[in-house]
Length: 75
Image (cartoon, rainbow, N blue to C red; front, top):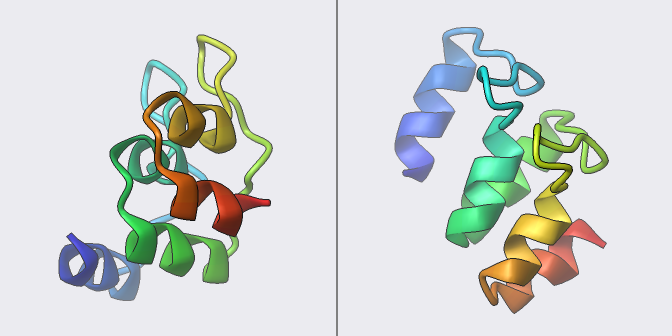
């Protein structure tokens, strides 16, 4: 997933854009435990405080799915 995200960012993808459910790339990567993608998105300015339509922040999503290393990175 990391290489695809890098390519999208090189082509101008906006790390802050959310889908219709309020999920940002950071929230999705955090939920799935993609540590290196989370790291890259943070480097590119992703906001850790943005919640989706269910009120879940990236930290909540990582926590609910047991992704401890992602949680540490988000703190």
